[in-house]
Image 1 (tube, rainbow, N blue to C red):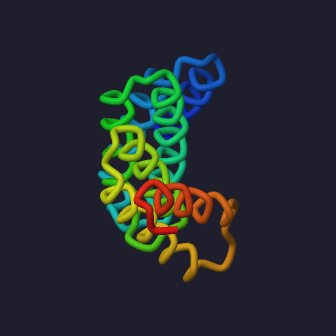
Image 2: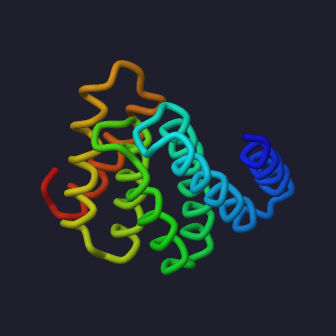
Length: 147
């Protein structure tokens, strides 16, 4: 347990310092230990996965802004693998994956991810940015001449 806390504290410090990739590696190490100690379905592991997904999504968006598409894609795929099927963080990840595909000009794939995100958001009670998904949907539909 102490090892998990140490790794998490180091990861948080690296993240605050802007050393996001180092932070991600430390969060992943802590997550591996959590899984081995508590099992993949434990609340502790779920919370750690959600936190790591949040960091992965943030880092991916920075890479997208810098036109570093492959780096963003790798981070988003990690976030997608860690998130649950109907979790809010999954909707956020799907929205960000849609942004990736939109930038790559794959509008139908982007639309598919946005529709998945919207379905999740409609089932969840609290959504941090419901307008974001709808705006992205409108933009993609407009680009597909389906407005």
